[in-house]
Length: 171
Image 1: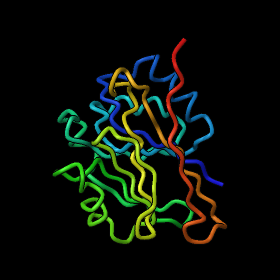
Image 2 (image 1 turned 135 degrees about the horizontal axis):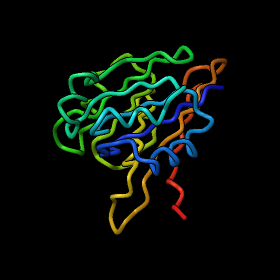
Image 3 (image 1 turned 30 degrees about the vertical axis):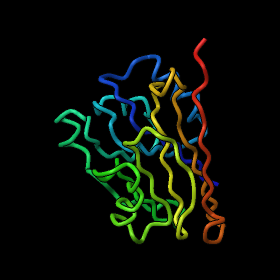
């Protein structure tokens, strides 16, 4: 079983100690990390030292991050194709149609941008939007992230399972 940590929309300009502690806690058992954009500054990826990290840039990333990170990428993990992007510009209601068009061959599509956590299947594809990692939702809603579990011996849809989680409240 491979556990993949997924986050998006961190909107941070630096890798703070608080952010490091959060990701060390919630992604402790995840050797692979997917960041679906709007990290703002690429320096925050330093928090994932020792892990395999895949990241894309989003519309709020600074110019350096936009130059260093792709807008999208297709990754193979455990025999499954995973499309990773921040999102496709346009109406929020049709974002999944647009990202699906970007990755028609994918078994799973990970995206961000809307700040709305999503985890469901459509047309045989697992769609995951981890929401915003920073608590910026309505009335101070907690930040969210996702964990994708990949069973390499699994068959088809059964080999990919994902869950959305809320960040623990800081003491």
